[in-house]
Length: 633
Image (cartoon, rainbow, N blue to C red; front, side, top):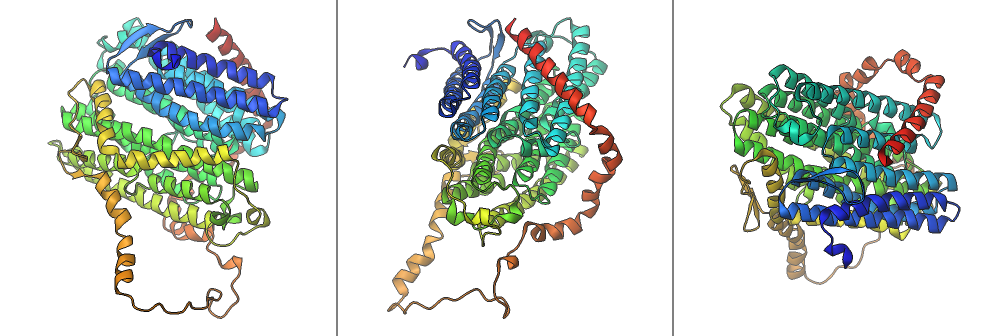
């Protein structure tokens, strides 16, 4: 009860301290598996709940304040945008911490100690970054979070993990250098690194443009914008599953919000070409991310590429808002930003459910390669249901939450095509077609992942011997899938809250986005509850008709094996992940070969020499130690 009475600032202080102390306590007590895992996991759950409560109160107030957190010497900016980012991160962090309660108990002692500490430190650093009131605090906290991610990636200590860690380390340091240069330029021109001062400082056109491009590159490296995405796929595969979920739902989201803050908040009204650059990068990231996902057999690498796809979809909303502000089209700006922010939140729900479900499969079978799985729907039914719902949401199928946010994004692209500027009228239909193609790729991904992994016959003994995952792990993915359903069906009542956040960023009246249970835009309206009712009711109609019209029941027919053209059916005849994606591999061969041309083997071999990886590992340890000392000081 005391927790519910606290205002946002003390709640955030409590969360940061609980994350830190529970991580340290779990690390110290790592020898006692059950105690250590409960301390780390339950500490994460408590801290996430405190942040959810604080973020909800900030959103309800609708005001922005800058203050120093109690106890901690940290200046925080509590605004609706920051609160929405906190809410999106903490909801997924809560379920990842629930998953960790079971995962850590089954991990090796050394891995349990490191992962429990690093995950909680990652969440504390990213939460602090989300409410930073100055560029110094933001860069410091992002750097600390990136180093925590690095050590979680390399702890497997195999060749792939070491390569993934080196990619992530170099990408993160390059991103930090770009951000330091961007804000150093703004500090030189404006005399301050405080966000509140930067908002009210008039910069010349040249300084604004150079700072924006540097910030776009820096935050884009964290967000994984293609072609700055090299660290993303293998990093998500090498880290523990719940840590990979946090990479997608928290670490990369900080990069996205950073682009939003620089492009729409700190530097004033953006010129048109800023928005067009973001839109171009967004559609390339979405389409190529979805295309490369279909070629993957490692289920977590596949999900990582789909994270890139969704990063592109979110950036379509942000880029559309920048174009709307540049062209003085408030309806377009409001609708596009609303769609981007809503999809940012929704992506955290379904992608975390997918990564946690993949982690359950990996833990119960020891396999990440979909080619070796199959038949898991009968052996792990709750995991299968949760992942099917999350996959459908990822593919934007109604009435789930992914559909609700992408539908709003389509409406914003239609608004863009109605603009009075030729380039905007041209971009609107092209981007809408690109988004539709991306959706088609996501639909194919449902068939590939669910069909190859959960249906058919098991392709190896480990898959045939699979059993349901521990209750905490299964519950985490099932509850997230349930939230995907809730946020889809209830979207007409949820969207106005996101519209208010978008309005606070743009400093314009909130878009009237919901009325009488239907989400409204200037183009069209859709009632998600009615869609859900129809989807549930229509399959029942044939059963009702059959029950009314059928006569006496015929005897049951005998069932034999599936017809296989006269041959005996075997597991080898089942469709594989390779065979499923082969037509696309042929159709888009030039795009798939592009990766080898851009990153030739000679360059990759020179980059991944053993001495460089060892040097970066020692450097990362020293840097993290220094940052912790600086943060505490």
